[in-house]
Length: 463
Image 1 (cartoon, helix red, strand yellow):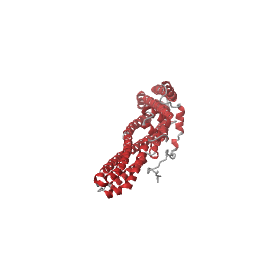
Image 2 (spheres, one colour; image 1 turned 45 degrees about the vertical axis):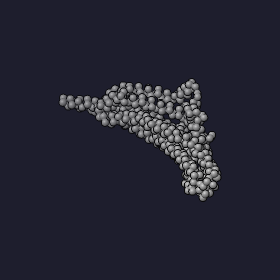
Image 3 (cartoon, one colour; image 1 turned 135 degrees about the vertical axis):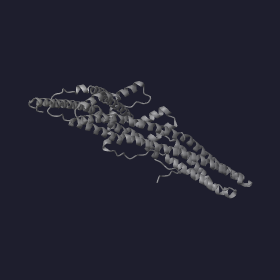
Image 4 (cartoon, rainbow, N blue to C red; image 1 turned 180 degrees about the vertical axis):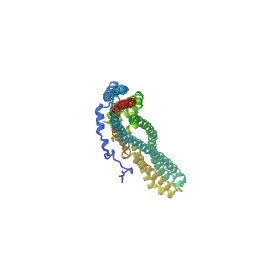
């Protein structure tokens, strides 16, 4: 049972305390701390261009190293047909494909593991953020509907009260009119406060919807941009494995790898390099922002909407629990005025109904009850206990922790598979196919030589 204040509103704590989030072992939050150490303190929105430039340079140190390493490995893959080519020598035994196959299988397993861990962390966090934004949109839309409902109830109450004096006898009309005007004044004050609340709350659903639509588009682009490089790596690894396993002579497989080196393998290494560097840069910058996410978020909100704006006051109240909430203040004032009007109606309504030919008391009481229910529901919808979890789940937990953890795992797997294992696999696979080709040619030459010696009566060569 929620406590109720003397004014009849549901009493709310100013700032809710949420239970800790239970995470899986691979969702260790120290990944976030690692990213934060790769950057520096996030600048304020009023920082100079030099400060922002210094910040981005500091955040780009490790991504720059990844870029340099990736370009070197791209050149290595381009030249792999030459650098991994072996001189064909006579071989008594066929070359062993197990190293190439094992390395390829390991690469495929790591690609799938990286995609799975990202799906279990970053991708689900984006989906959760979308759900929280949808819940927030539904919440504020319902609050706006309650504001419109209260306006309608107030108008009906005034219309009902305006018709009372005309139904009363002339001898008591002046006295009844005085009491009715008192109640009407209280209802008008209630309606005026409700109008102020409605003017403030009506634009909010459209603004929240704009944020949600933008977030939905970004989530789709992010998922495609993050997983596409791993898909290229997986395709490259599967091609090398098929070339190794399906080539009997080594000639077709080797030709395939030499042809696809500049067309697929090298571009894949380059794409994975750019993707890992950009993703790590985004992760470092975002982690720096999230190191003091409440203050940074409020600073940018204040800059773009104004520190005196109602949007900033609402953001400050719901994020930090400080300051005033214009929406709840309007609801509280409306509740006080409605309580006064209800008290007057209770005191004088029965007497007016008895003296005049007026039968609108029940409708008036029903209207005050509907308005009170709408006030309490609106107060509940806009309470910190109801609104703050949306921010906490979408920003503090999903964006600043779970998404960053998934992003770091994804970068790590991309670096391991795309920059280390894939070039090694291309080189080892090319070497195996070249050795296979040399062994096969040696066998063919031996068979031809054996046929010639058998034809002329000489001893057959030993293989």
